Length: 181
Image (cartoon, rainbow, N blue to C red; front, side, top):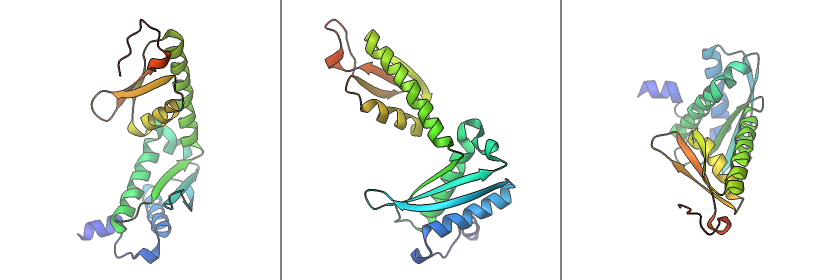
């Protein structure tokens, strides 16, 4: 039990705040990891009134953090989320960790590829497939494609990484085409 208090912190009351908990744990993590990074933490509320904590990292080790498709960013984000869940089990705070605009660039690249595949599906009237993606990336692609009524999408496969099938909606399919839902 003492191990978890050291890892996740302990004895925090709701009044201490999620933002200060995130700052404290992030400072400890960066110190122990040896990364040459500084950070800023900001808190907002979404439309539903739930808290959003955004962490922006910057410094000499930015490229290390963004390397390997942002896996270190994701790991830091997951760690901070678990710390908050451990200390405030009822809290619905969303935590996002970014470094040098990496998340936005990554999302834009996913959307550009989805747009080109969508155009192929519409022009050729047949299914096309997006490579296997992690759940957070599939969500970006599915949400983008859902805005266009001419196409539909769904995830295919087992496990964490799944392909996305993009296909014309029935209303845009030609009379002889078979569209599988």
